[in-house]
Length: 152
View 1 (cartoon, rainbow, N blue to C red):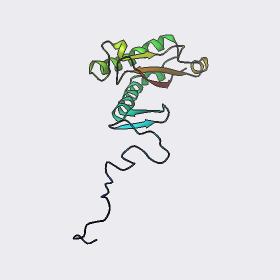
View 2: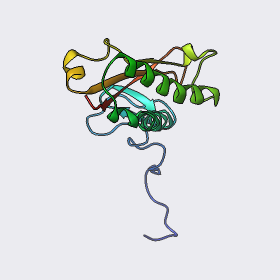
View 3: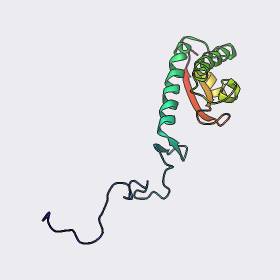
View 4: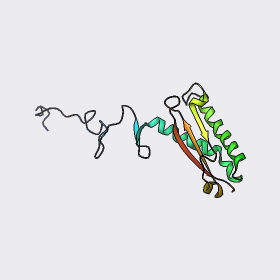
């Protein structure tokens, strides 16, 4: 290309005006909201990348906090202790300001009882915990499902 000759036609910018930057790719119809977002296929909604990372970190922290259940018998007393362990993790998150809500009840919930497990789960030593966390707005919960094997 000759630097002294001006290119003909309108200038092309592949930065902000490209279809990729507008959030559209092959087969995708809706653009993401502004900022860093990722589409979660399982949930079918756009989530901020930071929120998704936060949820993954929370799930790992919860899983670490209940590793001890592999040595326990599955039953109601175990479920109560598991709820306490998970609530401790989430209470620390809430106190640090990572979860939204004026009270812990607005920031998170933990269910680990017969409503989260089938008789088959119980008979086969599986514990199932349903955890809801408000990472964006108080009382708007994103639910995590955590499972762990027990001694039986």
